[in-house]
Image (cartoon, rainbow, N blue to C red; front, top):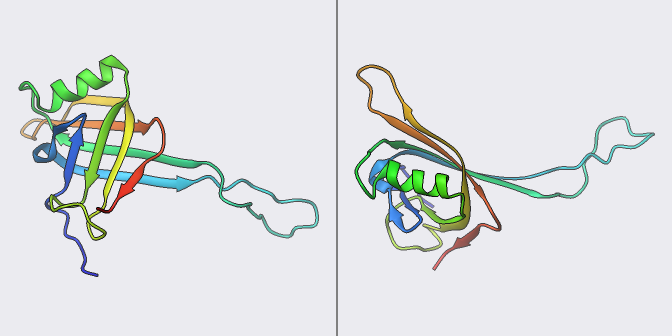
Length: 138
């Protein structure tokens, strides 16, 4: 299996392709590990995996044109409704070597303006899934 150099990721945000605006993307997947330590144990122990935790964090180049960063993210944030989001490591076709992570998300945080004098204007977005995330491979 070849390593992937992250230069061609694909982000579809509510069917809008924001890939050319993405600076970084992080899909966090986890599982809570409930403590089941009891008397007599000499070390902490954890039970079987509990509830899953998931989030998607995006850093984007800010663009205030219609159908670009601000218009797309603001609409989802201000509307409060769940939106579809797809994320792939490359723009190649979905396959076992390029899975497409799909889910329905709400925008839980939006920082529309971030930067210093002379920097590119950046927008940060935090998304929380409203249900399961699927991993398509075909």
